[in-house]
Amino acid sequence: METNASFPGFAALADPTRRAIFERLADGPLAVGELARGLPVTRPAVSQHLKVLKDAGLVHNRREGTRRLYYLNPTGVASMRSYFDRFWKHALDGFAAAAERENREEGP
Image 1 (cartoon, rainbow, N blue to C red):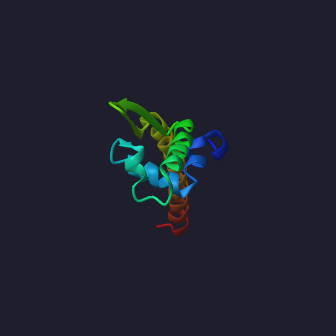
Image 2: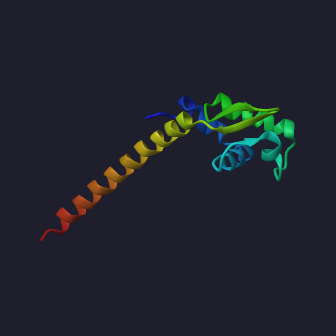
């Protein structure tokens, strides 16, 4: 199973400002100025946070006219989901095994 060290997305999302940016991008592509609106950091700070998210594989960007739009990287998000899906499956398998043991112990 992957760990924090092998999946940089977790470390990138450890910061509350980066999590807020990531969550805003879930609604669709945004420019830095739009992302900075309402955050307690400057536009240059948002750009630095976006660089960390991009380096972690969670965000991509594209040029649209004079603006650069940032959006979630579906591959990075899928990798993170895959990690949690494996964890969730492991937890559910453990729960099912415990329930089966309990049923056998109760007997007919």
